[in-house]
Image (cartoon, rainbow, N blue to C red; front, side):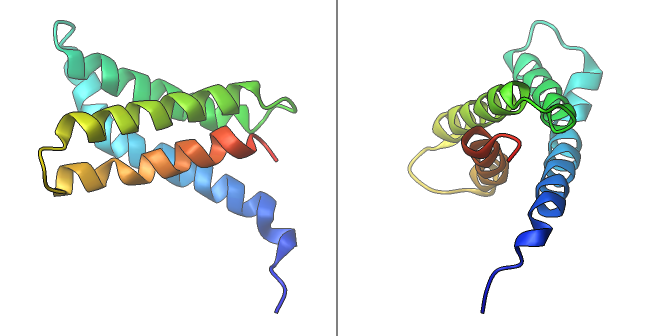
Length: 112
C-alpha cells in the first residue's frame, strides 16, 4: 500500500495548528501572569512566540522562520526534559516530548 502523498501539505498544517494550540494551552497562563523575575516566564514566552512564528512561517515561501522556530522549540523542550529528569520519567517530562518532536520535525523539514 502506498502512502497518501497528496495529504502531506494538509498534514503539515494540522501539525502546525496542533503544535500551536498545545504550546499555547501549556504555557499561556505562565505568560499571562507576567512574572518578569521568574526564569519560567521567559521560557514560556519563548515557547509561545516560537509556536506563533512556526504557524506564521508556513505562510511564507522560504523556510527560515519555520526552521529557526522549530529549532528553538526543540531546544527548549530538550532543556526542560533535562532539567526535570531526576532519575525517573514523570508526567512533567512526558509533556515536553510532543513539543520536542514537533519542533524537531519542522527544524528538519522546514516548509516542505
